[in-house]
Image (cartoon, rainbow, N blue to C red; front, side, top):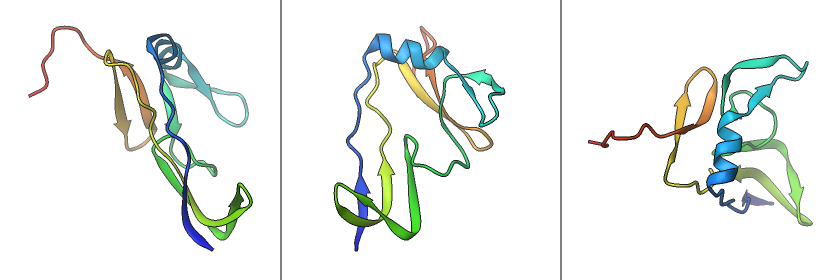
Length: 102
């Protein structure tokens, strides 16, 4: 059994980032979350962007047996950024104009 399967990193252009940052995710019962732009919720049973899932008995990907699956965060347009909330997960947000990172 191999240890880690890494999914291919996606690249999102401005249009895709804008669409994903405005999207309102829903839970398993269809109830919408109160915040926009959630791309990787905490506590899910499948690999989300920026996360790694370890499987007790492993999993098969492309005919190979792996212990874990990792899904890297996508490469995004420069006008967007990731924000991580410990209680919700990772959000995609539009960067504020005129602010400088220190």
